[in-house]
Length: 226
Image 1 (cartoon, helix red, strand yellow):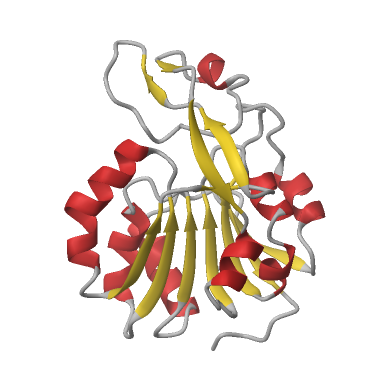
Image 2 (image 1 turned 180 degrees about the vertical axis):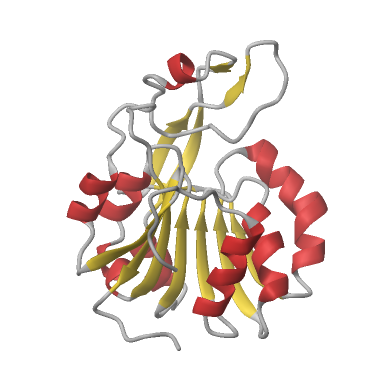
């Protein structure tokens, strides 16, 4: 993939390119699984049997994943759904759940970081007072589950990406690619820019491509997957 001035979105073409970067049976950590949309797109493109570790703290999303998604994905990969948020420490946090101002469901923007300017940027959206959810760290999870090198780490956790990085130093050192959501404004309190995220990540990371709302990074300290 080459960088271009016109930023792309994460289209089907992008996921086809990602599938070619990964080994046939990759290890993938999915932070902010929501409805496991990425797993449903990417797993059928892989030649082997992947290991997919999802993390989602919103109970509504987890219920839907277990009811409608996991039965289909289990045939293609070993898929684990962790009903927890990934942060800088093990414990609990408040999950601020997003919804539409007319009361309709809107779960993708929920975060363990307090909304800052999110409703200013998206006036059709609001948040509740939050619920308590468990938190873990990348390093603790990977060590506890004997997870070695990670082929792809996806982070879409609404401003909490910096927290995941701070709790995942050892994991990031043996991660090949990171796909992270990035934002040019502080939609959530303390939300880090791409530059700030890169400054916190151990090792030497190269920007492969900047997308509309995301960035693909490669760890130059790891050998090529191909």
